[in-house]
Image (cartoon, rainbow, N blue to C red; front, side):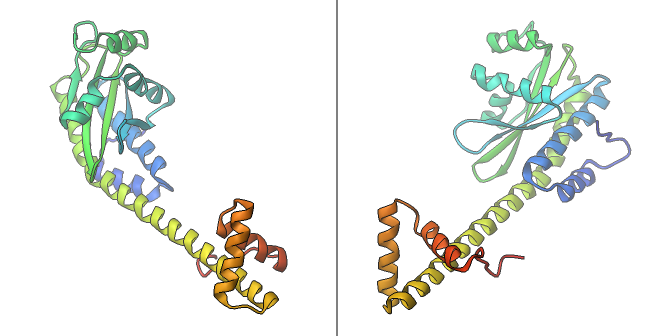
Length: 244
């Protein structure tokens, strides 16, 4: 488990963000760092999962361990709990003792069966309609003392900027990949039209009409038909200026 001793959480989060190859890896590192920080303050092992809500339903994005991921999935299966309440209210929600909490009887029963006796959901507003929460799980009641609670909330505050930046990076990468795919498709269609124009001595508009008719008859996308035609004739894959 990562140790937060002697290091600024913001510096550690930035280090994880820079070193992560993708968003999932960053969120995994974030959850492990959060679990380590809160466990150190608590004196007991505390698990942490990251729940993300970008649409209607929240979903587990990462966890400090496989167990943390499994625990995080109990709440959506039941339908409510501290993490989902935290996302709705955008404020931390605590189950101090599952045996004494009356808000979510079914969830508390399942938590107890899984060895979770207290839990804390801490929300993060990351970008636009997207929200996230750190979901902490402890094996004893009363684990989230005021100091431990403050540590968890403080870590979430420190994670906000790094998480927001991660979402922006992921969005930018996705847009770049979409642009590359679009350019690749446009290149294939242009080349295919050129081949058809040469073979049939027709205009570009007529070549496009022929290509579109083949696409319709085969029930294939225009790009797929174009790629197949060009690669069959050339024997090579299509290259664009995006390709290395």
